[in-house]
Image 1 (cartoon, rainbow, N blue to C red):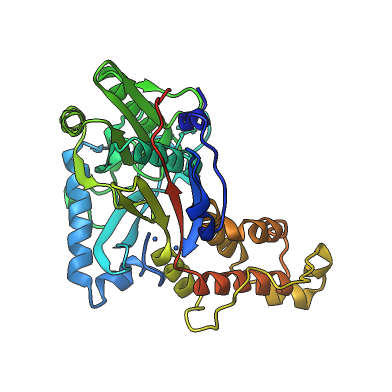
Image 2: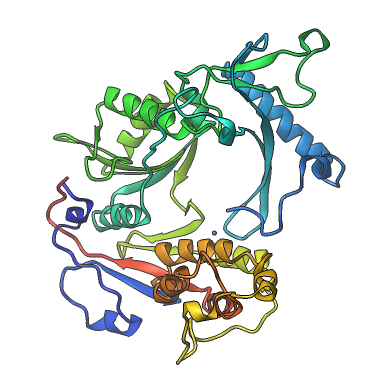
Length: 409
């Protein structure tokens, strides 16, 4: 059954906050009222990290990553194959931040350079489902309607729980091999991050576990799993390794976490307050749930060096005209736009638009038409939208709910 049917006849409307007081019918309303991933500044290279002020923390993060990979038997050291495809690897360094943009921890992840893989030789299937933001909002809304428990579970080193079926060979990270192993390579046994099939293999492994413990996979959104019986009703959204777990009884979630722990190493994050860069606030008495991205907006502004610019009050100026006639046509114009991060800007705006900021959706859709060959006017308009987000970063999307009599999957 379609996820939209979970609303049991409720309708989704974008309305003004003032209309709340006059709303009396049993419906669900999403309201943009006054509304986060990684640090805004570019992460250091490996050399910069190990020679910078946080060198000890970065080294600890790298050592931890290698130790986890070894515990999970992610590879074995073998002689280099005579004719195999040997792919390189590198570290991805990430500063994880919380809702208030403060640093939580430093993370180093060893990533395979999957772009060097060859189709049919060391990979084939790559599709991996993940919950759409529409689905996540819907599930959270229904849970709030019914006053269900909403918890979050994180699977540690998720991809590494899945085995690879193909023969994949990778060069060892710098300094890993002992002198007697010089010239050898790593044969991967687990789905290392960066492999083209890693997401698919993890998705299949997770689905196998969920089916084993009695869940059903949604045929509409395959990143949704649910279980329904006489005394138990649970719906789970999966976004790679982050799960939002909604269910009727608290005792059942403890049992679910115990079951999951039998297969994976998990982080029990308790009641949901932060998911995929979104701050989640809930008022159980009023049966409301609110999502916001204030910290994410702050990160975007810092990333594009717009934190000190003047805020605007509308996403696009009245009368703004955008067309391909404004795209570069001369060598000078192409050079002017060569280093402009237009695609990154659109991507950052798109995530906000599809998550909690439908008020910029039209502007983002318009600007997305010029991704292939953006001009200066297009880029200035992108920055204008970001300035609008600065002035309205407190806006939120709220679900105002009332009790429904049934919840059907």
